[in-house]
Image 1 (cartoon, one colour):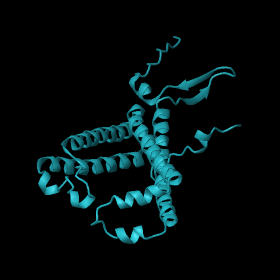
Image 2 (spheres, one colour; image 1 turned 30 degrees about the vertical axis):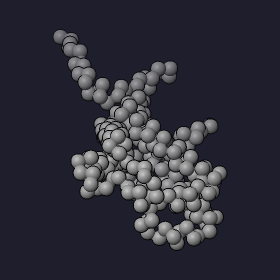
Image 3 (spheres, helix red, strand yellow; image 1 turned 45 degrees about the vertical axis):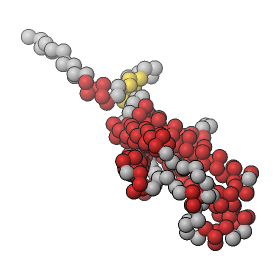
Length: 226
């Protein structure tokens, strides 16, 4: 019997030996907390831009271009709100076992994985981009000179190793969410074999929700011979 690759990697458990539903709920809550913190920082920067210094001075980058303005912060705020909504949908879908609510979060994971993959490919194709990025960092960045004095090949290898670890971890999380989606969607369509009435006829028990909703039938009255 041939086993498809999807079934070969399917599992109902994830890290820490917890269920994939529990792992998806924890992951959704974690992402919501991170985006909530980012949203609070962005809102505070909009209310008090001087305190948070979201305009970098020309002495730090050697240019008069403002890195972040009100429009960019508003866009970042909208993205944070959207991410909180998507993560909340995934958490609710895993908790209430609604498979359709998990799909947006799964699509976001695929998009994020593709972006990180493009970063790794760009570093391999254009190794000098690492040095160019380091030169654009502010002069107050810690250990900037020590990092720039390192061999370019070692820097590229370190960046690729770091990005590879991130990609491996993200791929594992994608697998956990996908297994949760398969588990939740499978529970709604599974039918259980109860017994066989004849050699050619089988009787299937309906899903649990439908079985509970159907009232039991009363047995027919029995008459006794006088």
